[in-house]
Image (cartoon, rainbow, N blue to C red; front, side, top):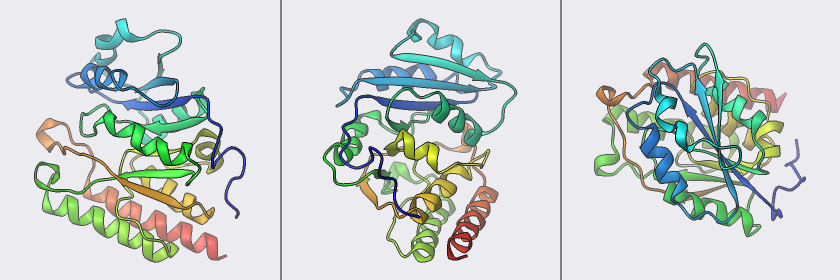
Length: 243
């Protein structure tokens, strides 16, 4: 399938949507949102907070920041998984360029302008922020190894070279996010969107970002079984492409 031609490379883009999926992030949500709002973006930006059935009242902490234009809040209940929350965000987005930012403070929103820049400059349609996993960025040996193996697996299957496919910071035109027709309800959405971008012929541009991994005691939710699911999703998409 050919790469999407409608307003992908070069734009012009008029608005950026940042989708922030949230599930029980009371300890970090407000600070994450404040940090994001403090960043000077290259485009007018809306933040779309998608509350995926939280039970800890986390969205109460940002009630004064929600308005009709810059910060919007949508809720879905019960909890359906990160993938489902993101799909809701893709559907609700008003911007024609879209990225994702988790509310757990692992990622620095100050990296976003550098990720948007190659798209605005017409170099590519898709940009991934890649993590280096040095020092405080290493959640665990197995976490880092698993992420590297997934990137290598995707590179091998699709004849590409990627170093981090599980990164949260992915930027692409909203039309492209919608066109790939994502189905994964949980963390498998990261592998699914990468496989589908590559299968569509999109060239993924990588740019280094800062990263601070949190541990289980801080609320880390991803499991080793999510890695196995990602391997299977990538293989299934590659097979479907060959057919």
